[in-house]
Image (cartoon, rainbow, N blue to C red; front, side, top):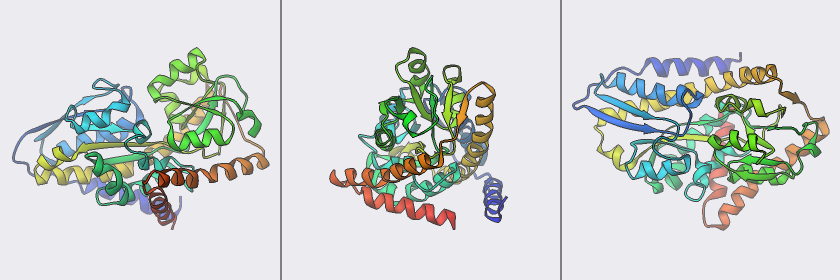
Length: 344
């Protein structure tokens, strides 16, 4: 473990230990909703810990009702449901609401990060309250970011096509989440099919799609492995951004001490959650291999060709947003600067 890694984990530990209880003057019950199935690793290692810490820091004066598995609405609807007060805290995958939050999928680009924490901490710097992405998109949509996770880099997994080189990716119908990953799939000759994660298992079983783009833990979380035979490894096809937000109106109505508790807990779970995701990524890959999925390494020449193609996704993504009058290049440059800072 590097000195930087040791320092990071120490910071996570200290941030958690510093979450001392604060007094609250009133009892508050908050709803939290997402689309993840019960037990999903993202909710288990971010939202649930966040709720526990906020309750503890407010001496039990803040409690939560949790609605997983799309109980209050589908993934694409949770932004509006949060803004409208149907839920107080909602999960928002920016690529599911790309019409409203196209800039916020910057963390999904195949940029210079190889771990969840590398992407997450850079994204957090630009998206947290006061950051350029907050000003450009979260605040205009009427929500405030509480915490976030950029998943480990995605790989391709297929139902039958053996993945042994660049050409084996051509013409596959590949589930994507739109935005940056749609550009990536098109670049290497695939056919992107946009759909949220809860719908992918059935689509694989029916043959609606040939493949998916996922980090390894998500394959297990949605029980997709029975329908998969082959996968790639050691390639960054992009990632996925998971955020939990609260409406600005609801936030402003909370007492200052509750806001403080949420701010501290959000920072802590952003840091600790990505560390768990990185650990699980390696463990999940081994579990998938044990289940029979074959992971192949592409020839060096094919990897170089693919990386060159994927390297242009960011500029194309930013240019398209610039043309729509949105600060795509500014946000991409801010994210790249934050990534560079993380690597120092």
